[in-house]
Image (cartoon, rainbow, N blue to C red; front, top):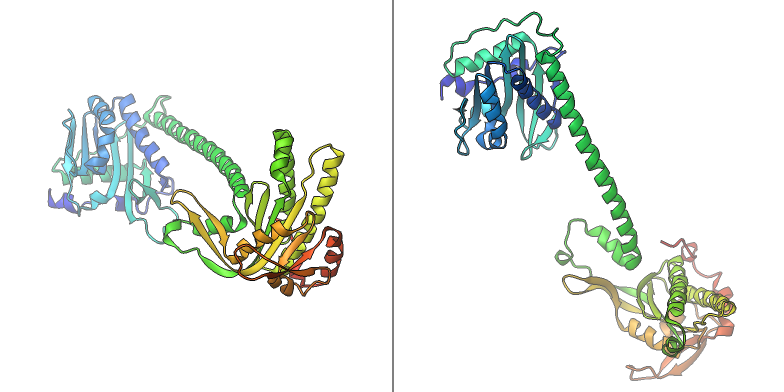
Length: 454
């Protein structure tokens, strides 16, 4: 490689270009300009030397077929590139090898200089994507950034061709532009304009198609998000949002904290399922569980899971949990009254509450996991639910104390499976649900009052 070629840079020729020249950093526009210049040469069979800088031979290879046609119609094609890949033998196409450190190895250019048409597309690579990118810089190829100028100015077109001819050891012969080059209906300039518009329109159509596809996928994702939102607990949803790009296996999600656990169950549901039409029962059960879940969310609790005909939920505040249980039983009573009027099955519900230290963590396989609550309070709440009268609730001593010892709750000792000693529990019967609600209505802070559901 000659010394002049090793130091040659074309972009500075137009660094202070004519304001009428087109300056752009859009990849789509630069590619459209390149193809339009090639179309002009091929359509008008301009006998000239076509100068093209590709930086790397590997970047030229996808254009081999197009440049073979170009070389067959014009006089000669010179490709300036670093030979990072084998150059195919193409008649009329000559490779001008560049070294990696040559300025032209960082420039992408096309120079066309003919008596009927003259144009130069000169660009420079700005580097790998920087932290702060200038307004005109765009990503291209493998993260490279460019800015470029298209000029029809005879001075700059001639200067670019002269520099290239001298760098490769050729005699430079100035071109006298034909005075009617711009006037003919089918002039190269007119063809270039139409060709450029066509390429840009095709790009716009592709972008429109991508936008429509993106909009459709966005709607699908929003729909899927809504479905998933209904299938997981509030805690699982919040944790999934917090993950971001962090995979579940790379961070610990175990939390230890005091919680009040609430269990519900329908009395003799197995017998009910044998005597009621499955479709009718399923429809009733779904509406019933919606009542339960909505009430839990209203009191800032979270549904851990649905257990067939039952539900497990948890609360950070025991008073909110007890008030939720009381409201829940009142709403189930109204629900059952509607069921009787519609000749549908009633769903008598028992509720158990227990407060204690719990583990909140993710369990399951590597491919499927769920957030759940574990601890003695979970087991105790399940056992207490089985002791409750349908329409009422039973709570443990910790919940009773935390809620200010409600007077409407009756205490008694009971043997609980898994406990060595009898346990003191407190029951609110079906007839006392309303009275207990009124008793607790004035307790707690405003933050304990029912809030909006999710």
